[in-house]
Image 1 (tube, rainbow, N blue to C red):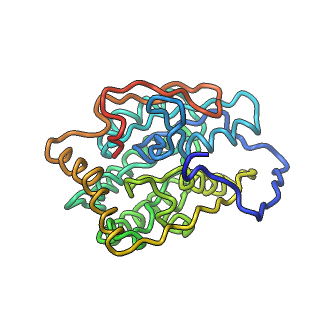
Image 2 (cartoon, helix red, strand yellow):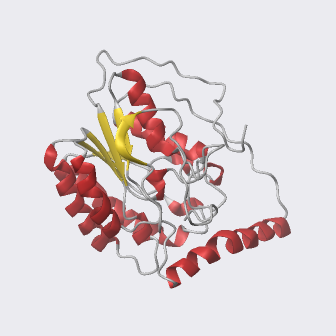
Image 3 (cartoon, rainbow, N blue to C red):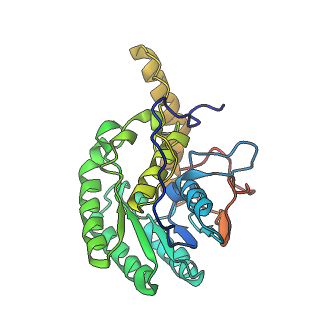
Length: 290
């Protein structure tokens, strides 16, 4: 079993199905790396990622016939790019369930304006909700627990309040990462300290299914204890992280590059759900995920 692969803890809760099946038959997910599934690689594939959206689709597909799922999300995209490249293609697929997460890459950038980003978000929500599909939107995670992003906690909170207000106006379902205390723990994050690992994506999938009121047998997962490190070892890890992940991220910003350059959607068409989506080739180096 690879590191951080979800394993159930010893306290399993019973799975009690609803009296009637959920109503959805076609799910389309749009967004950035969070929705693409970065941090949750599929072993044996070239740049294949599973992620929370795949996990949600697997559960929904297991409960009804003729379920199909598309995922148009591409890592590194800003909200304007997501709106330009994904909103209309998503609607053209005639979904009855849409998940939409965007704006995180804008908010975390230096000088990011959460109110301005939220206005773009609302424009997209107005369009996405125009055809009657159930629309799921996401708040951002509370960053208090991580020194890397603690300084933008206020920005994330402002953005979240905007998201909740927009969701109320357009009758969206809110998947509330801010309230999800389970993932406020670095053991649920990939080595880049930005993206969820398999454990984190599993917990997000459980959160989304709760928000949709879909019973399921996904169980809470218990991460391994963190190793006890000396101060020197911890600082060495910080330096390795900075060299491997942070510096390349800064350089891409300076060069106006994105980890999503030359990347296409992993599931551009609604297809029957399989447990593991196929991998795909890419031109960028496999390690560039942010």
